[in-house]
Length: 292
Image (tube, rainbow, N blue to C red; front, side):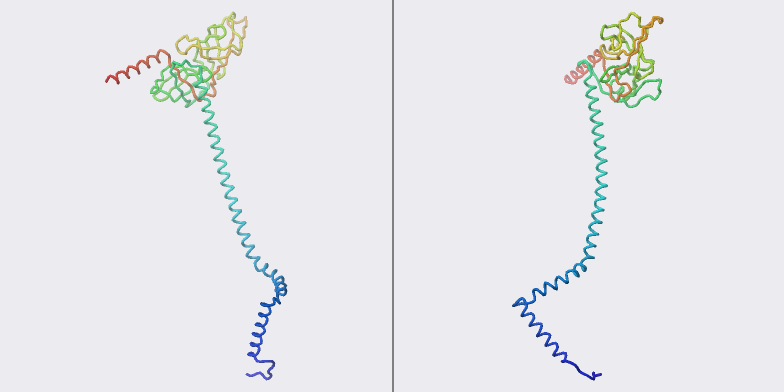
């Protein structure tokens, strides 16, 4: 259907006019920069629209980065906590090892005779009976341990071997009610008997005359009598001297110098004679091997 009224030029003329105007504007803009200010003005007007158009993408990028960063921070924090626990545990282990090394150093620095054979033993168990003061060590017949052998720590006498097994032994402590040690006062040489009373920090000394020269604070050492304990090792310190004339003897109590309630490592002592025999036996075996 054809329109009744035709207005303006034809589409072909319009296209030619538009192309001509475009070419003319391009020429003037290229040669004379006529539209630079207009372009800047239009750019300023369009900039907010550009920011609005890119805002969703920037928000998404910001959100994703922050979420990933927060997750990473949480993961790193958890890892740091785990590492901290591990480091604390390692620090505790190092502290335990250091304390054990200190104990062993103190133990090996005990006032031993250089020619006496000695062996370090570790406490495996403590008797749970409150009236029996005994411990179990990790040395036995395979290590040459024998019944009645002296046991000491870095301070003094601990007890003696009661029973010997193949790989472990039972030690009777000096505080046991069945144990007694011949001692002498280091200050004047007076001989006494130190007996256990079933209390971890107390020894008693029976049948001591009132005339005995003994004072609170005196150091009691092994006398060497009975051939159980070598002479001169510290046993206890006198804590109480009661001289009641109504009683036949003085009441004397002392405290063991050994750390009976904190034992971890102990030393086993061999008599010098047995050690000498063992050395001679070893030398004889060596000579036989060489001769053969």
